[in-house]
Length: 263
Image 1 (spheres, rainbow, N blue to C red):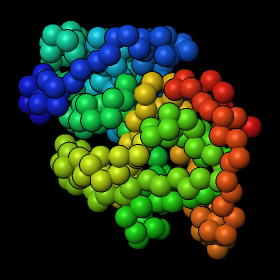
Image 2 (image 1 turned 180 degrees about the horizontal axis):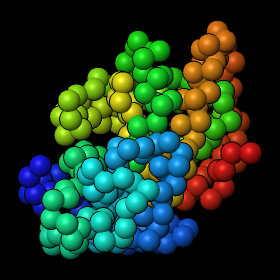
Image 3 (image 1 turned 180 degrees about the vertical axis):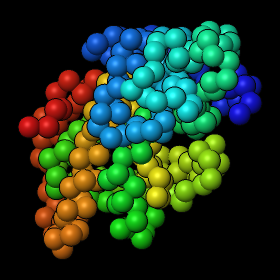
């Protein structure tokens, strides 16, 4: 693909450095980035050389390389860009290694949503659920792990009784060709924090790398659960049992998700 520094969305991307402290564990580091790649591989999200992640850390944007085994990525293999100066700070020593083809999708999502992190998985559950559901969205309600999902409209976590809705788009021959379909999701579903790609996988984005990791874990669990529910003829959405919260202040959550771990 062409040099990422010429990408229009990257060139329009602006980072708010006054929000550096909203990660409990601090900004993303190259060490943590590569450790997460290994973890995601072990979870079955990034087998082979598939899957990718992009994270903003201070004034820099880190993006995983293309066509490298994720469990073997070294710190020097991660592409790093200076967002303010629109320059490439680091690239792998091997000049044949290119930045992930998802990079243009990451910059679009970050620019449009203000997200600091985007994770793209190829999990089996994300692939299979899109083949079982023939509509253009996945929906599930009344599950505990829904409380692990951030609501960008309220700045809080979703409630147990809320319905989580994730748009589904059709797959394309390459990730970069998903640019316009994902732009359509961002335009038509401003509350979305994820998108499923049929026969392919999942993209999740959030205000911090920690929240994005948590949401990806929760969503993958819900997708796996949904497959078993469908096999047992259990409805994914409980239409007749919606609840109203009398005291919303008790449900307030920070962008850090410090008080929202499922129990």
